Amino acid sequence: MKRNVMYLALSALLYVTGCTSKKEEKEEVATYAVTTPLKIDTSFTKEYVSQIKSVRNIEIRGQEKGYLQNIYVDEGQHVKKGQLLFKIMPKMLQAELLKAQAETNSAEIELQNTKLLTDKNVVSKNELAMAKAKLQAANAETSMAKMHLAFSEIRAPFDGTIDRIPLKLGSLVDEGALLTSLSDNSQVFAYFNVSEPEYLNYQQTAKAKGQQEVSLLLANNELLKSKGKVEVIESEFDNETGNIAFRARFNNGDNLLRNGETGKIQMVVPLKNAIVIPQKATYEIQDKTYVFVLDKNNKVHSRTITVASELPDLYVISDGLSLTDKILLEGVQKVKDDDKIAFKFQQPQEVIKQLRLKTE
Image (cartoon, rainbow, N blue to C red; front, top):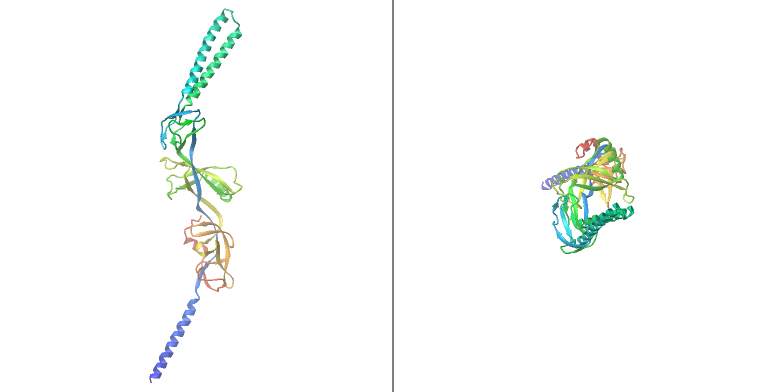
């Protein structure tokens, strides 16, 4: 009796185990979602490394040789147009001015005497003309001496901010020596390089919409409050890089930006007839990007693709896929080459709707 009971129990266990194994085998055949590439018109925000330059930035240099007698400003100070910045010891220049003035006075006296003699027909009119010419030469020398003396005082040519002052009081200043730099930071330029295809797309858009606004991402990953406008494009492409330089102008009312800073220009780039696929349908091996393509026998095969640009959740494909190729959307990490799968097709338009891309 006990043996019969044990036999029945064992048979029941084997039956249940067999059913479970068959059930697990059926569960191993999974159904995966597939889709196809989609051609759309869209746009995305691209970042370009940029160099920031002041609208006006000049070097202040000594125009005469001498000792630095006075420094009236400090590094980083904001100055006004015409404000006195430096004074070079002018003793030699003052002496030259006194000498020129003395020669002028002598020439004036000589002209007066020559004129009196000419009126009395004692000397010829040519002598009078020579005396006038001598006075004119003396006046020119005086004007030149005054100008050189004025060069001993260095004044700001425009409103701006003083840069580093390398020389100290008493330093010997040679003609042309750098005293400081002056930057007008009320507005700044941001220079950045754009590829040829992006340049062509921009030109086509600019004709229809006018100047394009751009944003500036600062080094602390904060956006500048004011937007800039692309206003200048260089005339030639760089033969080595294939890029062309753009220039955008930004208002800098709060004086946050300084000459020489770096940042990233954020510009909206239009894409016409772009072929896109979801990023989650791809995988990478050794810097190459792959997708699984489904053949007519429902087998998957890996294929290399070329990514032209990256959008939120999507890749723009330039090579490797056609619009009719069915690609694996889910389970990319679960399948391998030549696996036969069951699939559920999802329309690419529906897939795109679930992503973050902005379409037009």
